[in-house]
Image (cartoon, rainbow, N blue to C red; front, side):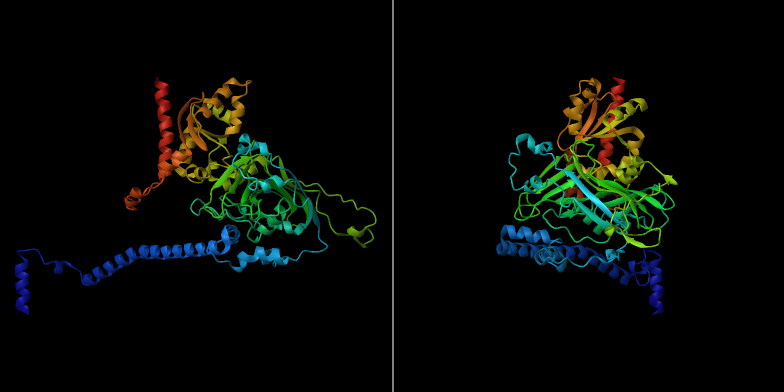
Length: 553
């Protein structure tokens, strides 16, 4: 054996060492383990694909069986209850039907199953509304041609609040209190967190009954039910939920401004679903720090814009059915306290307990003035709520006329977005745009550095274009409208209104969609750049380059 070893050593001096001698001890087993690891990694997506395909096939088979068994209208009702769309109804999903058939309401959520003091204070809340102006809808221009009467039945019949007035224990409004004691005036927090994003997609459209409210949703649901019996506290698309801001504080009281994104389902079976989505619910509440007393409560849909409600309705029994979309104007929808919350019992000057409800004469209450130790303006509180809901608002978006004045003063270009619905509320037609590219850091940086930003409603620019008292502004509005294509147009303009560059949102989304050939060449090692962000950056920089060339000519 020694001679064999020596012989190999001698030969090794005149040639390369065999591959086995270059390998570290245990390398063979390492290679084997590596091969198996690669095979396992490759097998995981194949296995997942196989499982998903099997599940999809099973789901399709169940859907076919349900159509044969129930018929189209029955499937519509069933799918409206089947929130997870698995073709099975859980007890939780069946609850709305059980409550309707039996008239028995399920037990309250434990988080809201609080013991309210029967002698505690009570707040009277009144509901007011004026119905949506049908002639404000786009479809009204051609007499609602092609729109079935049944589609709008729920909208046409909704003329007044479901419950004109209702009383609430003041302690129920503790749902609005800040979490903990560490928040300062100006801080924001989520009352009802949003569970959706551009990555999670939207909630189903083919539903009639809202899911049972939980936690703080219970109070919001009860309040909105005064307006219509089927409120959905969480909207189908992001940002959903409710956010609050501590506007002012004293030793004993808070003034809290809030914003809620909720919607209503106006139709019932056999009519197809009709979604009524106000741009936002906002308002404020002034209450004691222990929620034993509510001084003021107001919730309303802002009516300061020409259009403030988005409406969507289905023309079929499935989620993939055709959908119509329109927008309109709602003059009034609000809930307001009739006065401060009042106690049920009081102690008179003799020490006797008096039940106010049984008093022979009306009892008049006098409340102390509230002196705030710290506060900020209502406008600033609203801005902070917007920023919590919409990160793209890290860029200031000025009104149309102000944007061009500012651009002239700062020698910048105008980044303008023209659309049917407001960009910063739930009536928006540019949801995908604001949830992706407009909130990306590179775009935010470039907009803040080189542009003055603005967004405008088409209807508002049409009004400006017709304004003979301001011809300069009318000309700018006309230039925008001339380059507008439904539903959203992004533009780069000079301070004088000249459009340097523009792109339609649908064209933009087509350009940034990842195609199969792109997916095949995708590699993490090469780094990842969001195609929508890079495309929008190129769009903005092209506008800057055209402005530079224009200044030379």
